[in-house]
Length: 389
Figure 1 (tube, rainbow, N blue to C red):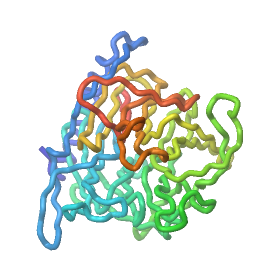
Figure 2: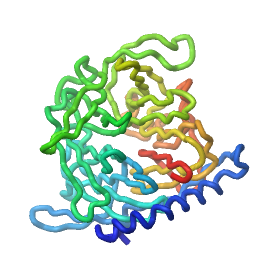
Figure 3: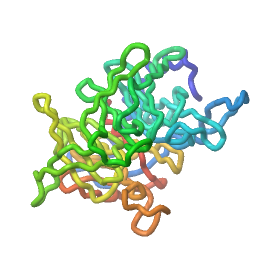
């Protein structure tokens, strides 16, 4: 049952300990042997959009529909949040049934739904800002983009809408969000939607965003689609300086300090380009490394120890939980062959299978399929929640 706003405030506090215990118990039994966990991962569907609904109005008529198209995931302490896009177009166009709203859903690691909020537009990026105590959501990945903040503990309302302070100079939209060293970094997605095709030397790949007064978000370019980077892949070309040519900045992440490589870096995935860009800031100067991948990927999740991996399945309209022998230092990714720049117009196709869960080597960039048991999973968004978080 979905909680009312008043009951949700109490529930968030009361369930915090419970959610942590549930997560700890599940993760602890998933890795027998402790230091040498056995391989194998099991999928369980925990949230199904078809069992949830939201209300919207078209031409004065109130309508109800199930939730669909889950995408980005984030967590606020032990609670998880997911964005259902509900068929809204990439520039905010109405779905086939006239809906223009995405729905953010709060739930526990066991799939117990707590609360939900509607925001106008197609929600592509979602994260929690612990300093501001809010969720931040971007809408419309291709054009007509803006962002929202949501206070998950507000009894009523709690949603603020921000416009960007200027037309986005990359002539596209905004997507994934990462809080990095206290700053809000947002991917400059779909460059050239309304202008010259990407790449262009003047197109930013990432923005640093500051939330200001009067509901205005100020964007400052961080680095560009044609910035210079050093090749990170091991081999003869390692360290070579190359000029990037990004056409699809998409997901991003702050690499944990315990990672086997790129620890503490900001990571940007350019999906169609099969590349990940890793940024270090030394003395204020931005230094970039590019890891060329064997396959296109969407979200990436760094494992820091025992825990659970959560994934959205857009085709199945579900949020799934993956349990198993997670090893600290391993990296999982949602492989997306049909989103590669060389994918055929009709996809899946021979050589271009549906999305699959994979591991990723930070040294070679090789993407390897993970064997799963349980329901079929075609992942898009990923989130690793450590034991006892």
